[in-house]
Length: 210
Image (cartoon, rainbow, N blue to C red):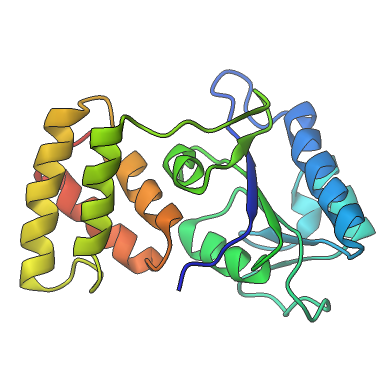
């Protein structure tokens, strides 16, 4: 079942990286969500210690709490606002479940582009102040069909066959979409594991998507 939550994100700046000013945008948004919901937030990072991360991230963890997918479970028992910092897809999957029915803000790291996830989620881009746009309608239809074809994680014969056909159609319909966008979008649609997304990326490489 798709995990629903209110989503926002801060894209990675290719020229300047994750500057403190950009990270403060994420912290400020999730702090507002915490205040509105009357609860503490949780920071999820790829690995500990949290002292390895920039000051805005460390300070948020001090005011609330911070952990990783492999770390101790959050002290907060119920789902609530989550700040997901520079996560891999496995970590983002974990963070999403902690934010069920609440709010999640993700800061992007270039190894895991999030624009596809953000488009599928209708996430607020905190840099532009606008909701992340969807692709063209015909491309959305193809992405939805690809998601349906992945009901077994694109692991069986029919799933792989349909995925390769749809990936070819996506490449023709939207040459600018790369494999990571497509995979990230599928993850954003929900009901897709991180391992399945990795499998889809392998299939996409066979059809020479960038």
